[in-house]
Image 1 (spheres, rainbow, N blue to C red):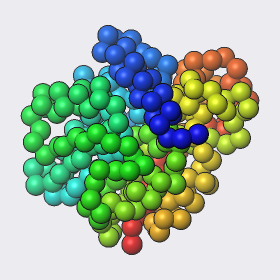
Image 2: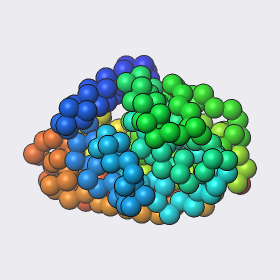
Image 3: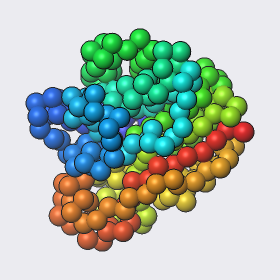
Image 4: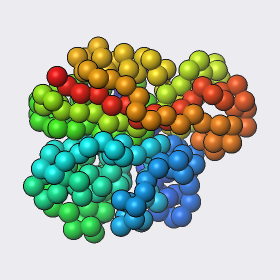
Length: 255
């Protein structure tokens, strides 16, 4: 399947989920119940309104080691919570770039950035398979439950390696899955819920290693239980998936 139909489906689903979230409701996308497990601590206390619009499955900046003055790129930056947190870490001398393909998300992120008074954040519209970012331009690539939504993960991994400067690092929170049942394959709702397009953990690590990144490993892992899977997928028949779907934080480095 080409990228365009999948991108259109995902973008539409997340625009709708954002609209529901702004009304105090939760949609069936990755932001449904998974946000509960995101692991944001005191560092997010200044951004509670934005946190309620988060559609992530983890906290890619937790223990990542981002330093003042560095440049951080967020793939699928959404409403901007991780952009704001990264901005705090890099400080006024640093730079934060967000890339998202959904105009509604970009508009919300711009409003949140303006409300927070941040001048070191820039958001750009684009797809993560073809990033609108120059070669060897960033110190960190982060992402929060977005790469699983890509229909061409090999291209995403190649783009990550391209935009990282030598010595640059990766800290990505994402969902991985082993041996998904046939009923989820081709299921648009499951895909947009961050499970239908998830790949096995080993394949994820191998994909990053294949583009030349080193020190690739899983730093954190949360395996979803049955109630969490029901909330994530908005369906009851999940018993066969228990123990096979997890939120992980993957780290790596460009030599």
